[in-house]
Structures are given as structure tokens and as C-alpha cells.
Image 1 (cartoon, one colour):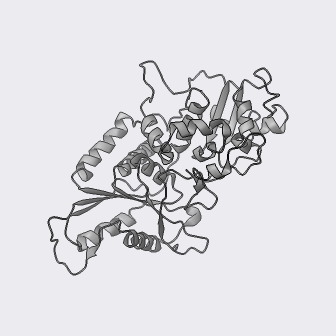
Image 2 (tube, helix red, strand yellow):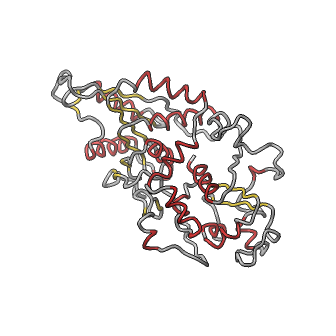
Image 3 (cartoon, helix red, strand yellow):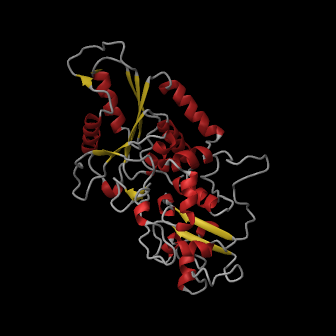
Length: 379
């Protein structure tokens, strides 16, 4: 979702039409976002570029490979509509090469503006890097005077869950969450490259909750709830595992919330593992992203794009669980409060550009380092 949102903004800035390659696991997720009975954002099946899903970093038509092979010149004074290819593939995924990164340079954007078709693949939220291009700087400021509103506004405009997904969302919300006076969302993601034991992860969650006052405190001495004036609260847990839900639910089953008030703990699914390429799995994920976005308070996992998208749709600055270091220990501090509701671009472009540049001091007011990713940037 975040890479699609980034591409949509790029299309707006470059006066292009956005078309989406729609594999089977993507169809059935969203409604058509643009008005008109005969309009669609889905790339037509007779699009002349064959095997579009197989384009990658080694593709001959990638911008980086075209530059390396001297088949395109990134000097805007030399590039013409006749000298550039009819289409260029932009590889902006995690394995991009240094020459692919030139996409993030202003002069290269002037060249790409002369190409009719741009085919873009990304797995990043690359919006923060667009602020570093003089070509887009002024338009971005006019579009988003509230600088941390980009993903919130565009996400709410572009993404409309399909009827089947919206049915999942509304049924669950009205059954378990609607009656609560306060809704607390907790998104937990354990990464294979930064994992700790379940007990340690649970302790990290609870340490963060105590520190930032997220989950209701418990009264270990009270036999029953008192204080009927306290708010009723719904705690929504989203995780691939059920362990954390079971433990948190047991806590409020065995103990009353301090000051009274009812606390309900809910988890829609626990798939145990991420299933790539399966439509039904993706529909459940999308439903949970939206359910989290209905929260008044959010605790998400740093680095997680699931958490980023939920807080963006909610328009909230979340508290983020920090990712364990290489030592496999619970991080200290266990969490941080995000300074922006904007997602993090995990990989700074790190490229030497020619031509016009933006004022770096002015840029620093818009783009800052991420709290959860060492070399990442966010608006």
C-alpha cells in the first residue's frame, strides 16, 4: 500500500495517469478509486509490455541498466522525446543498484519526463525522497501545507476497501469495538532477522505500556471492578501469533482495571505466518489495518509497514516498539513516541546528483531521520 501511495503521488507530481498491475492476490482488495463508470486503474491485459511481473533489477529496460549501457543520457540538455525509449522500467525495490538510485536526482527527473511510459516497482514508501528534488519541492509544499499529512490524506483518498473487505471491517467493529469509549490498538510484529523469545517480547510490550500509559493499569488487590464512571476500553491486538493476545486478555480476566471500567481484549486473526500471494490472507491483513486505524491510541512495531499504514489512516502519531539489536535483548528504551504520523523511508537514496538541488537547511525542516530505522528518513 505504501509503495502504491508513493507512486500515486509521483504520478500527480509528473502529470501522469496511474495504472496498476493487478495480480490475483491484489484483485478483490480495493474498489476503483477514480470516478466514472467506465474508468479503471487496472493495467489492461493487452498492455504491449509482456511479462511485466518479471521485470527486475537485471531487466534491460531498467533505468539503471539503460544508463550503464549508454542507451539513455541523463543530461536533460541532450535528452529529447525522440532519443529516449518508449518506456523505462524504474526499479526502486530493496535490491536496487547505484545507477537505479539516480531516479532520485532532479536532472534525471527532467529526462524521465520525456519518456511516455514509466513502469515502476517499489517496496518502499519513497515520498520523503521526493522532497529532495527541486522539480517537486514547490508543488509538494502547496499540496501539503501540513507536512506530515501526506500519507493520511492520500491514503484516505486512494484506498477504498472492496465490499467483501469492508464487510469484515464493519462486522468486527460493530460487534467488538463500537461500544467502547476508548479504543486502543496494539500491532505486534516479530521479524525473523530481529527476533527475541515470546516472553521477552511480551515483557517489552508491557514495559512500554507502563512507560507510556497505553494499556489500562490493573489493580492487583481489587476483587471486582469499581468506579462506574471510568471509560470502557477495547484493546485490539493484531499479530500473526496468539500468545500476546492470550496473555493480555488473561491479565484483565484475572485483575480489575485500576479505577474501574470494563476492558475487552480482541484479536481478529492469528495466521501464525505471513502468506505471500494469497488473496484471502491479504484481505484479512487489509481489514486489520483499517480496524487498527479506528483506534484512539496506537502502539505499533517499529519498521513495520503494517503499523505505518494503520497510523497514517488513523491520523495518529503512534508509540513504536523498538526492534531488538543483534544481541537479542529487549531494547532500552522499549519504545519511542513517533514525532510524525508519516511512514519511514527505510533506505536513504545516498546518491550524488548533478544539476539543481534544494536548500538543505530548508529540507531539514521537512525531512528528518527515523526513530526506528537508523538510515531511514521521514517527513
